Image (cartoon, rainbow, N blue to C red; front, side, top):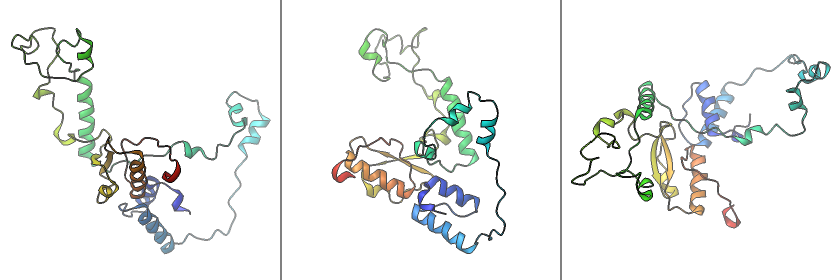
Length: 227
């Protein structure tokens, strides 16, 4: 089996099925699976497998529905996996999953914090929240029908504080060398906003080799020496 063509997530699924460790780079995962296949060679097939009935021929004999016209259209659907690549998922315990679900439920009940007099001036409606400090501010005095202020009571569950919605711990990187030492099962990469496309493309390639997920990945048109 050609393990080099599989993604890191698919390789880790195969390792979990065989009760093998899933840590390491992609080359290490492929080597681990290859050694497992060499130690446990598959049994030789003496008999040919039974032929499965041709579903397409049965459809041609019966009445043609609207759904059958979809299969008769011309096109190559063998490369369907090229349209979507499964993203790396974190390895979480039950307590962390429960904390993430609780934080998500709390976020739905939380009001939208707006700046004072955001409804009067358009520029204030586009800015973030700021604590009201005016002496006669009705919002600061917590009068009725005023926008709510951010308080301590709106804090989320502490176990999920600082985690990405997927459950990863975000690691800010600006160079390729900062990827070394990160745990692909627990940490994800966020590239700095000031990183150029040339260095960003190198970080993408290195993160794919290490099995790390890039949270703010964006398409880059590689031209010239960037290919």
